[in-house]
Image (cartoon, rainbow, N blue to C red):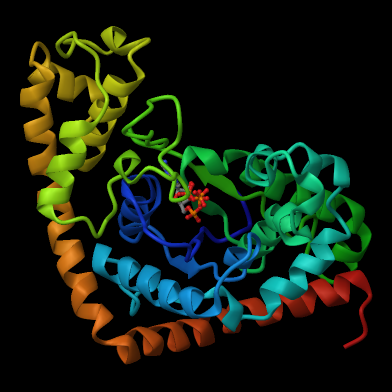
Length: 344
Ligand code: AQP
């Protein structure tokens, strides 16, 4: 058994419209994890600065994503909800971990390659370094479990590599400072369920993404019923009816995606969905899917609209969460300083 107490940590960037992928891959899972684990959920505002940002938009998006956490059902009394920049130990530990992580590891990160595009020389150092800050976000709480969507798998592997290298490089000092044979746990990614990678509604081979220029590619959490209906009606499909078994979804990425979304929202497996809906034409399935999306998102949207009118309440939650997060992060960072030989 691990000596580390089980603790969940995850974050979401305050960069614009949250979408169904963020909901199914992250937020819904965050809510579920509360039943079994202590959880820390963070609006990672420092990460949102890596691709250039407008200060006023960052401020409002931070409140909006925080409101989404609450509206989805994260309980800030039971768990910790805060924004990253309130806890300076994230950035401090990131520097220490920068000195542990290797350039070669970061050079392999596919998300950097995708986001930097062809003009890599002009990308910010922060964008390149993003995965080390993410490792620090997790390790500053010595968190053991991280619910994320499939796109974050490689970053989680890097966080594990950084933790392992720190434990190896400073093994003697870790033991001398009374931490036994390892200071950091190797955090486990929790990438589970039928919708760990929700795809674009326009192209089933591309991830649903906030930065997609086509508004018809995604369902935003804030979309109203008419918009959802219109987007699902226009969603790309093929001509065949739904299969009755999962094997029938192979080479049909758009059909697979819509079935995954249905399953994720309805707490079913794809097999269960197909057992019930197999043989249906897409027109009928799309109507059922629209109804389900609207039923699940409408209460979240209503609560987000209510919270948008109560920014003081959201700020108070973040302030209180930040204090509680610091109570955990400060002693971890102090121990890291001792291990590294930084005089304090
Ligand atoms: N399409 C997706 N399917 C499942 N999970 C997803 N996540 C993101 N997209 C999908 C998960 O949502 C959490 C928060 O993500 P984020 O906003 O911090 O960053 P991101 O992954 O960069 O989100 P986007 O929409 O893809 O933004 P852009 O367009 O800026 O790249 C994470 O757990 C993520 O896995």
